[in-house]
Image (tube, rainbow, N blue to C red; front, side):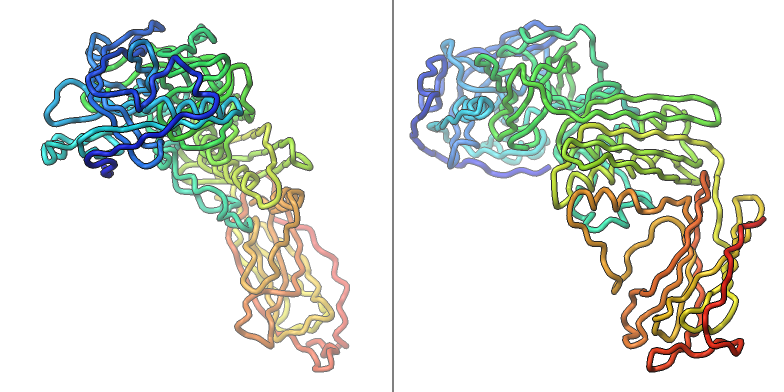
Length: 617
């Protein structure tokens, strides 16, 4: 648990509210709030009925600026008792004194001398700034503070030992915004929250500047944790009328066959503009999260932290501000989302699954969601975890993309075939989102997967060439032996012609499958725009493609590792994964004036005419 001291001793700061907010007479600002005042708070404990609870002002905390100011309150009443204290999901609950709004309940506190729940209220001033920003206006909000106490802010509930060690301190911890997850299995949800290890062989290793893409370490790395229980969305969720102070407000990251989002409480609404939570969601700043209604089933008591059990409802607008003091948004303005369609066919059982999900338009979140939803779709269709071969076709569309990206891939695994397609898709989308040229403005992502338990593989077993020495312009005949998985051998015979102007001491012939990493000293891939990025992704060969290439290394600089003079042939084996790599070498004779030396057969070194032979078993 991380804690920090945020306020010590007696602090005064008197500022004034400027701009349009000064006329808002329904508020009580921080310099008007003092210890001993009493009021009420509003929240939903169960169903869609807003309940009230009693509030007593204990004091006010101020730090420099206005984003870390709090009003310290003691809360009580039936709603608090039934909830087991200040529960997760209560963040944003409006607090009123004398009928005027002073702010939103945002943090719970543990004070060694008190049994009655204590909480921290985010003052209304910085929240109004978020409201005005959501309406594309500007508001300044500034508080006053007065409280003798050491305040220690922690990222979670402190232990009894920690509290007892500092009897005069006020420990505070966030009233968490619970992450709602439905439609994901335990395995897929774990990947969403904690991330996973990228399997070897995805295109991430072959794309230049891929390091700019996010690490896909899971939502927990962003400070998001799930509710202990999940509930499926309800068709009869409440509408716009539920978005009132004390009512629920939702923020969606995924909706459809999989639902991921967060719920909290509405603090204040002014026309179509609304604010809530009393703290940030991801501190995302300007945002484009779908704003939804919320249905609360009940508030569940828990020894660790009570929480509201609820579900997201109908999208009704956009959360366009995610700031320190609150989230804010507009009702009636739809958020821009990305459509996701996944089709999975289990060839062995002839069972198919279709997943349709709308994803939040946020570059750092979409790959995480693709990874978990894709894993869920495959696991559901296969109803097993284990080996197999998968063929997958991807289509990615963006409003600012010059063309639709289309790519086909094939993967095999002897342990867990389901992880490969979603990782590849997540990597491709991350690479597009973080390209250095243009925001692709993604609008639709699709993938179609065909999976079988069968290991459909071809191993590169042996490679031989027809001589130990060649001259520039000669043809190098090779014989490549391939071995199918638990099957027959395949022999491929063909030829590669040495460039007539090649100057080197040695030449190399290499057989491998799929894409190849650009080696040190080799000319790097040059990308000039988003169209080049798309072309590169589409042109990298998949693992059903066998490549045999001829190249040399710089004889003048033996430390230069990059190959040059590369010529190659490629052969596709549809439905099979080719794997393995073999390299052989030979001497290359040449004259200092650049004229080729004679061949080993006594000829003048000119290249013989050799027809490429068909592969044979």
